Figure 1 (cartoon, rainbow, N blue to C red):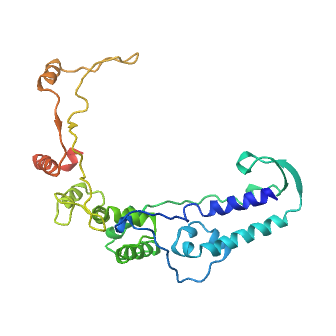
Figure 2 (tube, one colour):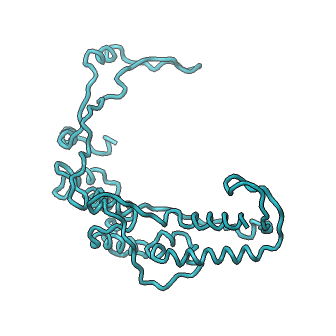
Figure 3 (cartoon, one colour):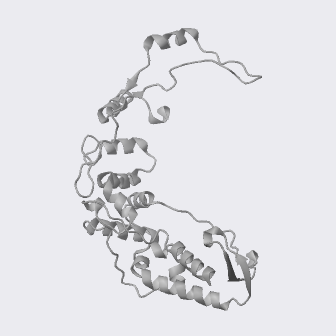
Amino acid sequence: MKLKRVMRDWLQRSAWAGASLTVALGAGSASAAITAPTCTEPEPTLQQCLADGYLRSVCGQYYAQRCNDLIEAAFNEAWAALTEERVAKLPDALGGGVSTVRVSHHQDPSTIRVEGGTGTYVGTVLKNQLLHRKGFTNLNDSDLAQNALLTQWNTNGEQLTSCEEYVYEKYYDYSRFEDRLGRYGTDYRAIFNAAYASDGIANRDLRDRSGNVLGSVFGSQAIPKNLYFLAEQGPYPDGSSPYHINPELLALVPTAGRQFYTPTWSWNQQMSSSLQGYNDDELN
């Protein structure tokens, strides 16, 4: 029966991976202890507890013990239904040694395989950006669920109910700016301008949900302006000839010297202004 106990414990731990999370952090909304979630739905069935993602939901966490009991009962029932026994050496992962095990019959994978389906995983940032892209109108079920989650995050004060909410509030000013970028799609010029707008992130202190100042977006270290400053030739693969480099231009490189710059908001704006005579498509 040792194997039964070990496998049961493993099943329960596996089912709760990613769902049972207790984080004790310091003060502040983005560093407060995660609070117990609440749920208004009725108690779940075994099928709900085993459904992908349920144990990570608010109700899945609320009914943690209920799901734990259902999973254990289902395992015990399935174990009791196995009648064929044999003596086997257990692997180290299951405690090692020799134990009496019950054997389940081979399952034909052709009876349980599903083909032709597709699925995608979309992270929190993309979900939030999609809401802004749609202008919070014509929302589907997934959009409505994400919008409700955002509303909960923005109205529950310093409570934290998930790792996603912790990150969102840890970098609160930037998170909200990043969400709004969804309205611009791939218009990178609009994104650049949004950073310098009154509600952007340029030239101001960014704060977390508690009002604590975050670190600078840019580092203080100077960065090489040209990563390929040293223009060395060869060796070249067999059958190929060296690329011709104008010797007059090459002679100017050491003379001009390698240049560095320190990225700042003002430097980026200066570079943008100096290139305003060019179409963005040309620069790309």
